[in-house]
Amino acid sequence: MQGAQRIGKVLLKNGKSPNQPLVPPAKKALKILVAGTHADNLGYQCGGWTIEWQGLSGNNMTDGTTILKAIKATVDLRTNVVFEENPTPDFVKSQGFSYAVVVVGEVPYAETMGDSLNLSIPEPGPSTITNVCGAIKCVVVVVSGRPVVIEPYVQSIDALVAAWLPRSEGQGVADVLFGDHGFTGRLARTWFKSVDQLPMSLGDAHYDTLFPFGFGLETKPISH
Image 1 (tube, helix red, strand yellow):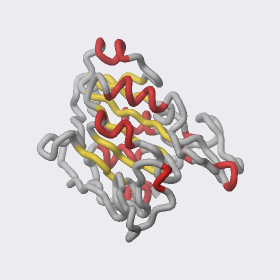
Image 2 (cartoon, one colour):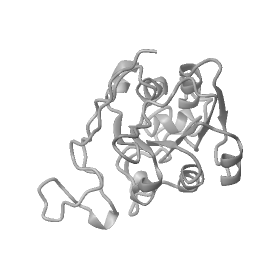
Image 3 (cartoon, helix red, strand yellow):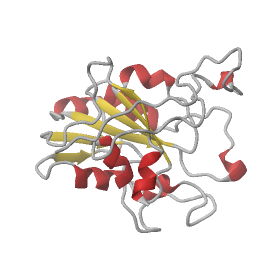
C-alpha cells in the first residue's frame, strides 16, 4: 500500500536554481520546522469518500500516519522537529531552523460539494507559505485532489511537491521527500497558471502552463 502511494507524488520544483536542489533535505539537520493545516490531519490527507461522504477533519476517525508523524519517524533521532501550524515570520526567523516543510491544500469534498470557481488553497494555507518561505528554505507539499492555484507563491518556494491525496499513510510522502525512494511521478493533468485559462488541454493554442501535462522532476534514492 505504501509503495503504491509513493508512485503518484510529483516533484514540481527542486531548488531556486538547478544547481541548488533542496530535495531530499538533510535528515540530520539540527532543527526543522513542519507547518501547515495538512501536516497533522488524517482527514485532510484522506479527502472525500472516506469514513463519511464528504470526508472529515482530524485524526480520530481512522488509524494511519500523518505526514508530520512520518517526518518525525524518518529524520535522524537527534533532529528536533518543531510543529507550528501557522507560524509568524518572526517565529520562523528566530528559531534557527535549517529548513521547513509546509503541508497545505484543499479540505475534503466529494461530488458537487467540491465544485470551485477559484480552485484556491483556503486560508491559512497561503499565509503559511508566505510566512515560512519568505523567511527560510522551504519545501511545500500540496495535498489536493486536483491542480490548485499555486503560481503566486512558486517564486518564494524552494521545492514543491504535489502529493495529491496520500490517504491514511503519510509515510509514502516522507519516503520520497527524504530520499528513501526517488521521485518518478508525472503530472496526469496540466497545472494551470490561473483559473481564467481553463478549460485548457494539451495542444490548445493558449497552452501556457505553470507545469505541463507529463511534467515531473526525478530524484534518485540516497543511501544514509
